[in-house]
Length: 257
Image (cartoon, rainbow, N blue to C red; front, side):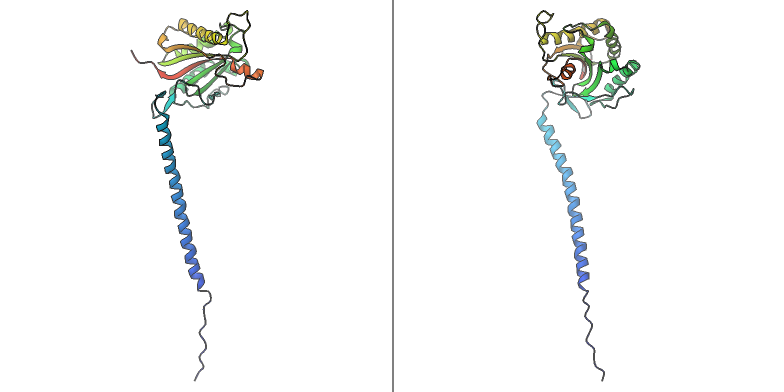
């Protein structure tokens, strides 16, 4: 009679159970990861809804396409969104419609040659902010110190811009700004309030006189003195940037007659 040999024990059977466990664990983490990403999207939707609710409609203007802007205040970033004009075309994007972008294109085309010069680059800048399109002029160039009349050699800028803006229904607001330096006592104006307002009014009157197609209902003027700086007044460079006049092509439109 043959002697039975003891059965061979498979010591590696645990690998089967281990592999099953690893597979289940991997599937579990995949499901958890997908659920986490889905929750992020839901949280963002809820956050956006709460933000829209708390903003409120008090000073907001609906400009279509589900967007609203505050037309009564300056932007959180006082510099706005710069438009690069030296290359001929803008890289900026208007906040509401393509209408403002077309105005920028027409201004660039009208001033194509002058925009390449260093002098004009230091004189004129265009930015977008929550008010609309801001055509920003350096007061150091346009005006003599303490004066509210635009220098004759820069009137062509107002003429070319006025020709473009006269067709349309957007409200145009001219805003004057100064630095915080006190005015000379023997000057025409006693305060920066009067100087900044006087410069804005001068440009409004000029545009109205030159372009009769721009109705009075589209034009307004405001002076802010040194109340809304775009740079600190502790350096001469900052003061120079704050001395400016802005023609704001706003998001507001006049009602049709």
